[in-house]
Amino acid sequence: MSRFEFYNSQGLRIDGRRNFELKNFESSLTTTSNFNNFSRNSQSSTTYLQMGQNKILVNIDGPKEPTNSNKSKIDQDKAVLDININVTKFSKVNRQVSTNNNNSPDKQTQEWEFEIKRLFEKIIIMDSYPKSIINIAVTVLQQDGGILASIINCVSIALMNNSIQIYDIVTACSVGVVDQMHYLLDLNHLEEQFLTSGTIAVVGGSPTQNVEDANVCLLSFNDIFPLDLLDGFMMAGIKGCCTLKDIMVTQVKAMNINKLIEIQ
Amino acid sequence: MNVLFSKSEKSYFRESLINDDSNQCLRLDGRGFKQMRTVEYSPSFLNNCNGSTRMVSQDGSEVIVSCKVQLLEVDTKLDEASLLNELIQVDLSIPSIDNGSKLLTQMEDVLKENIVQHLKGTDKLKVTQKYSFQLFIDILAINCNTYPLGLISLATHKTLKNTLFPVLMSQDDDLMVEQVPVFHDHDMKLIEIPCSITFVVAIVGDNVLLVDPSEEELQIADNCLLLNYIEGKKVVGPVRTIQFNEEYSRSFNPKIISEALELINYVGEEVYTVL
Image (cartoon, rainbow over all chains, first blue to last red; front, side):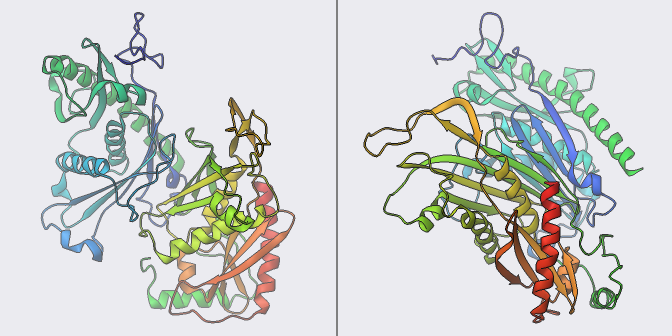
């Protein structure tokens, strides 16, 4: 038993949220959008996502013709996806010093890269961009639990902002279990550290929260998970993802209206 | 850096800059010769760090600077210069350039020198007799379209201006008594760390100077000067030169340095008033 009370009798969590309450979700299309008229490469704009205390930047370059260095990767029929995750040294409270001197990403980051690449290869309509490469550069500026979910959400928004064809929007959120009965949505770093938790990503699911339509496309657990709780876990996760989808769709619409006004 | 202009385009661009007598000609992106690019910035946006800045330039280059403060037990045998070298740690990373590249090392060096130089003789980072603050300045340049040193140094300057330090609660004299410094739980204070701003000036021909050059302008410049400016003292050393292309690189008239100094005195003052 840990010394924290993660879910008290009033139904409140450490940070004052209810169990199914998501963190503050705020995304913005930034930077180059204001200067689009001057910018040479106007297609590269940065998407900034703030999900609670998670702060993530995603920059999509492409689809474009591969440069010399990665010409060997080229595929005649469809696009090639290249994902690069950079977790900055200052993203946690204490500054991390990498042990390897050539700054290659650690095991955890490489695993995320692989998972996200596999996920989005199925989401993006790759056939519509033959012989080209799509570079996705993710920068994690600040992390506070559930970082994999945040990265997936941000990449999803960035793809929409960059008008890359996708089949559907992917949303992800993290879920934890307290006392084998309560499910907590969208964890913070304390909860993530002490609770049994996992990340779930969902594709589909209509904006009216029709849970039956949703398909789970990524599921990852950090530690041992009791199987009898899996059902509740999935339901909580899928509901969370559907809610997130609503929020994302409204925010992306608002962003693009603003962008239109700016251009005019 | 990718090829942007063909050979004839470059030549045309260069000629039109040099042969313009009135200096009324506009640059490629519509700026005047003395004009910097527009920047927008958001200060202190990371609450894990003591100070942070996100700065975006007109051409889409984006720089994020974070400053973290740690406590370091000082080795009293060190002299001032090597101590300051240890207290200020600059770490620059640009995704498109691999780590350990000479260009990165050079930029890190310039940035570190900008801070260390002005800290000599002051004890702003000193906490007690034995302990000192150590600054970790992490810089991340995303999406950079040109030589980013100018933008980075602006952002670093801005970060150091809004970096907050913890307030010491215990006594500051601990030579006799062995004690670990204790800090206030919430209260933070501002210590102004002086930091000069580096300006990049491209030299084209005999008398054309371009402030904050873009990539296309760097491709046709004879040479580039890196000049440091700090409030009150005007332009301070060291002045460096750097080349970015092979076609047009050549030596320049020494007289143009004094012109450049005047130019930066003027531009630097303007920039300081804006910041």
